[in-house]
Length: 299
Length: 250
Image (cartoon, rainbow over all chains, first blue to last red; front, side, top):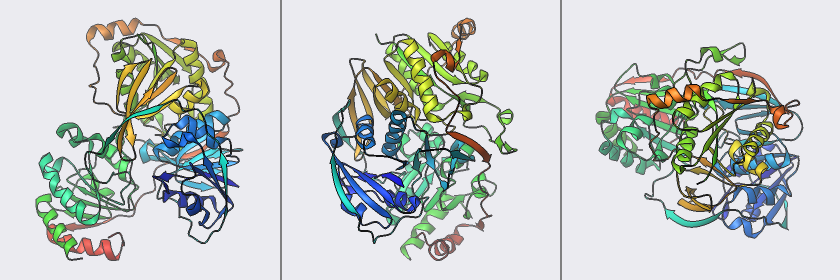
């Protein structure tokens, strides 16, 4: 039996939760923090039981309080999502229960667990005895479908909150976050200067993509660190990653090589980025982006 | 002024090539070992607080150099918990060692990176906080205030938020806007003479036998089959068609 800590998005279930259920392979108990998404979780195939864990502590995020409240009903082997909240809850719950925690898992085969190390420059396989807490990388495990009809019970369990939110600062732009996006178009030094990123944004808007950047241009052109893809930025695995004017430094490849499909546009035919690209186009961005924009319009 | 303990980990530099041989990453092939990048921001933030800064690491002897590097930019005390091979420990054991090491320094405020760039796990900050019975915020990109009340900026669902947190606490840093200080010649000379206190997990009363996690093998990432390569912007419509028909991602 596996206990799943549901990932919540607003007051709904985040889609990664269905992937956690899929990875559990049936007979899963799903804990819904704050009770959010409980009905939706109950309709997933492979869910045996849903527990809505309700309490005042779930109004803002405090990893210690959430781990304590959820931990009081979590047992056996526990899965959470490898997201900022999932990882923090797993870390605290493992420490409180004296259980080992393995984060960002990409494969589970019985007691054998696989995860990337050095941002995907290598993989490692571990065996774990007894109970454990894992966080699973999003978009890696097959999602459970609908068709379940599990019972939902409610537990009132709050915990002491040691932090308080004093100020909320709205996003400066409405752009999608690279860690959430299914398609990412990223630019590097080959884009010439930061003003040319507007051409990437234009294409991003057509296909609902997020805009990313290499470390070089984040550092040199003052772009926000939040859009940096690579070993010291975000590790991403979208369905489609389009790299424009990015040569493919080892730190960058580490952050995006697990994307499902990679398109590289670069004028240098020998750029290392072509080594990981499914589709490589040797061309300047000045020529390739207008052609891309037009081809997308014609889809 | 607040005395702060900073947790540091030495990792292969992010520019290092990782070579696997015989089912293990070959440490001898790592050309450069560095302080994990987010730990550098944690150290910088601690030094800016102006109190005494104790840096703590758990790892093999090569990690001594990183402690000396930290002293060169201003760390006042250096504590090394000697563990030859960190892959023999599980997360819970490492957290127990570091929490005990923090208790030994007497610090109630702990800074660390949000994750180390080898495993990118991010377990240690919150796990140490749990063992200390302390509050924790992670992914902090800006910090103001002092131990009576820090204000920490972290990502939230709809942007960012400023969170109040007070001692005892663990703050796990993302990249911050602060420029990292570089050592000067005097700092480097002083650091070379600075003593590193070396202890064993058993000195802290932590038993490191019986890890629940066993490393079976490490391997290079799966090779991708060679991709298709096209010349010139005129190939763009072909690629877009393939993305729709072969890859089915558009």
